[in-house]
Length: 43
Image (cartoon, rainbow, N blue to C red):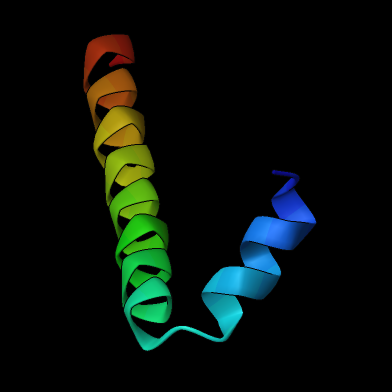
């Protein structure tokens, strides 16, 4: 299954939208934690 097919499938599914939102939020949170950790180590 290609990424675009998966995206189209999830786009029509409410649960898919919730999962996608959680993934985006989780990715942002993880990136923020990693950035903070890197900044603390560098200083």
